[in-house]
Length: 252
Ligand code: BEZ
Image 1 (cartoon, protein in one colour):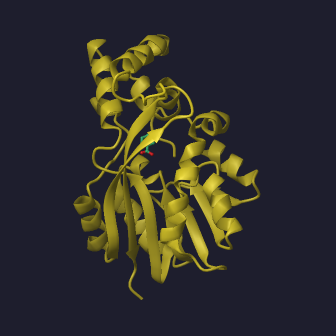
Image 2 (image 1 turned 90 degrees about the horizontal axis):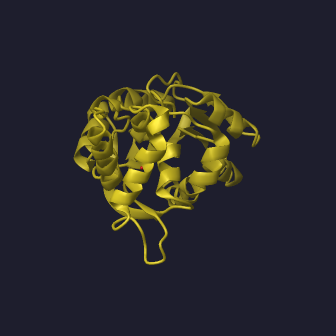
């Protein structure tokens, strides 16, 4: 999804974020779709997981706010469309709305939930996984501290919404959803490369609080600060992900 200052380059995403679709596979089990069901993939990115869903027999429409990612999804032969997740325009078209690792970029959750509600048929379900309370806390802490040391104020740049289960369940219920399950899951996640690659792929709104020329030193400083905490025994980097996973139903 596009957020102020965040660019989505499908090639960079493929190189540094292939794990996102792989780790989203368990969410397909929670979706438990029947072949032929119409499913909306909200925040489909480059379509890697959407494609798996389609291969399992769902009739999928993917939406994403990044035109570049939508083009990459279309190149896989998917029905993908550019759309703002906070202003969805579907009316009772889908048996399910599915979302993996995208909702935390949408900082107007009630508008998202409203749009999902309208998009679903009665009896339809909303199944999702996003960053939850405490997600990437160490990374964010080191990054904001490094920016502050350089005289920058990162507070206004925060592009992420990481709710608690109570917060998100309350919003779903307020719209009329029956929340069947919702939980936080700690999932420290190994990276394919350096932490700096993750920062460049996912944290541009923070990085661009500083002039681009400062980025290499800034990234080196964040890596140095986390060297003792976010590396495994073999020296590989991981990120302190905490997922909020849920399944909710629009009553028939
Ligand atoms: C996440 O999937 O939790 C995430 C990805 C990018 C930035 C922040 C969080």
